Length: 254
Length: 258
Ligand SMILES: Nc1ncnc2c1ncn2[C@@H]1O[C@H](COP(=O)(O)OP(=O)(O)OP(=O)(O)O)[C@@H](O)[C@H]1O
Ligand SMILES: [Mg+2]
Image (cartoon, rainbow over all chains, first blue to last red; front, side, top):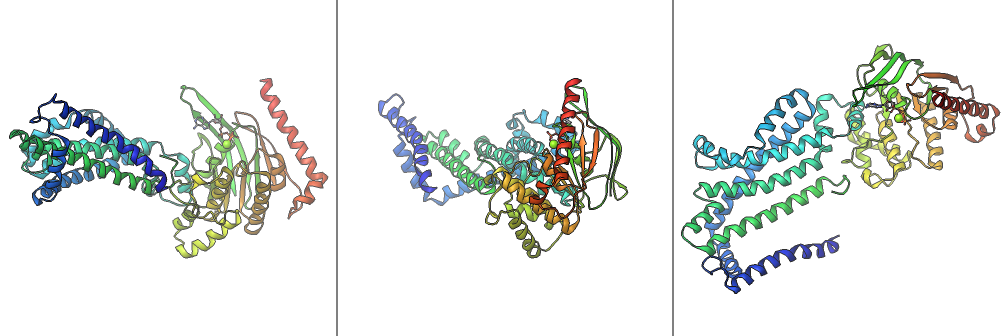
């Protein structure tokens, strides 16, 4: 298995390396002044230097904490509301119009209001992340749970599972493939939104680092948080992928 | 006893028409009887089984077990679905363990019985396989074992041997007869194979093409325990098979004439 995945990984690395090479070529060609577009080498050198500094760890920790907290809230709410709506027509009747109205709203438009009510600290950013990641997870759960094969439920009921437990014992595991797909989308959105929120107002975090650097024209420092967040995204996605492989062992290829 | 009294079922279909799947079915199945249902595809055999299982509420009439109207599923009636309906997130062992665990049988005790059942359906060594890793026939055997595991007094089997090769089919027919002779479960058995129905049953119900009605009920008066090798040579057995096959052909002609 590991041997077979190895070339795949190399193949995945190739476009990233090409992108970095292209970046270097643009720098060399001189189309963009070095003051605006620093070379990848200076950026990676600065990134490595930063990795040793506790201040930088603090920024990463602040961003990750907000990201995870918001994402976790979105998963809990999205999965429970999605399941409940799929199983209980009453809940569906209430949730459906709300989702239709709220899902297309750009959540960032709510950010000023969140700042005023929740303050400039973590809570407002976490809420914004949760609000944005919620809908893809909720919708994926809802559709997954609505499509659970009827006979799985019947089989469980015949075996003596009370109706109230069907949702946890059958509907939830049966819709797991769909739920995890929603989570994957939610996680990408979470990393985008946490950065965005920190760029708008914050006193720490990677987004704040970028804005600080931009204000003082420190272009090299501007690129450091950027590659940090994309690396974090890569790592989180890989972690989720492993979790998915583990949880979905029994399901057809996904 | 299972009593089906004037049961009809009408499905609302998407094209805002409705479809009469079952029309005025009345039948009685005594405890411990082995009853087969034969009929052309789409005549409502599965629907009738779902109604007795309590999964579908009939739009007309009433079905009863031991005198009480059926209001929902219960572990006294164990279905084996045509589509297997195995839990994809559970292994073979996990699937078969499900029922006993729901019945709160201690894990260790349940596992002993469950492993024996898995062995009986010929899947020893496959305990840790997931359903997606099994062939159609193997899935079907897991589904049978999963239902037998919680020991229902009535088995509702919807073409349970449909996806099996001739050899495994014969073996499982014998195993089912053995279980039935030992535990005297009531078995309602849907099949398309006339010889299988005659070999296994006390009674064979032949249904008409849709809307499903009961065409005839034939008592199979053959000695038990039944031995396949002897039965195949028995003129009475052969007569039943031929007679029922002829009846089913007629059912087909009915449809063509309409
Ligand atoms: N959920 C449903 N909605 C609408 N019509 C249905 C539904 N389920 C079954 N039917 C119709 O009811 C009739 C009986 O279906 P059923 O599945 O009981 O047939 P069957 O005798 O089991 O057929 P087969 O031998 O092919 O399994 C069919 O004509 C089918 O189209
Ligand atoms: Mg059927």
